[in-house]
Length: 315
Image 1 (cartoon, one colour):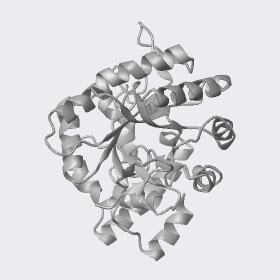
Image 2 (cartoon, rainbow, N blue to C red):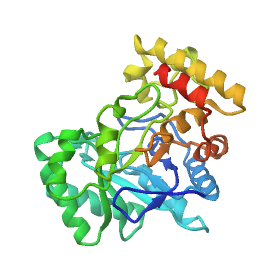
Image 3 (cartoon, one colour):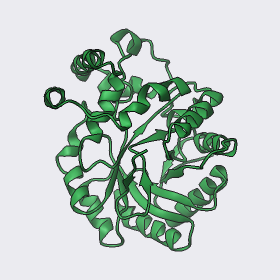
């Protein structure tokens, strides 16, 4: 299984990793609706059996539940353990309302809670989930640097940061990785983020390479209309007009290309983002073992030049 070095770290990761957002289940603000824990654990085991060597989660996914599910999956897995990446800055109060904080006390408490839920002594990659509040990003980053020096974190990175925000952090300590959204329907990272990352040896782990399911090959207008009320995509602009019609055209063409090549549309969507030299790897939100088998081939697939050229004009 091929691996790629993540930025300035000593981590060599597979081009695809397990995304555990949906594994947080329902009952919180950005839920993907109900998710069976056994399906999540089976998906993680299937991914590791297929050679994937890292999992990306966050404390806020399911308000701690995703990290607990990851820990259960790893406790029962008999093979080689993967790297585990998680995030801070999104905490929650006694009423299960999400709180945004980059204060040192909050981040330290979040780190200790994640270590406990994940049942690990050190977190392989710890990321600031969102640069909010903006005025505290230096304070938060300095706290991650301290936690790294204390041996609780191996490497530190950011998610959803702009170039100007990353420059502010780089003045304090090097950034190992950036996690931005990137897909055929969200190509904005190509403008500034990816060039900056490659110029500064910052690894890039992209999320939502299949456009949060839009480019999976199974999304239709009817399916979107019937999403459960607690599925966060009901409130997402890419699942509403005027973007919805445009995105469905891209999704349909991707599905047609997949049929021509004997591939799933999702595989092509993932392969498309992986073809960019700035991208180290892509997070894929597997929800069951069958999805792993359908999409794992994207790690090694190279898009034909003619289709790559057409895809580049679709977004």
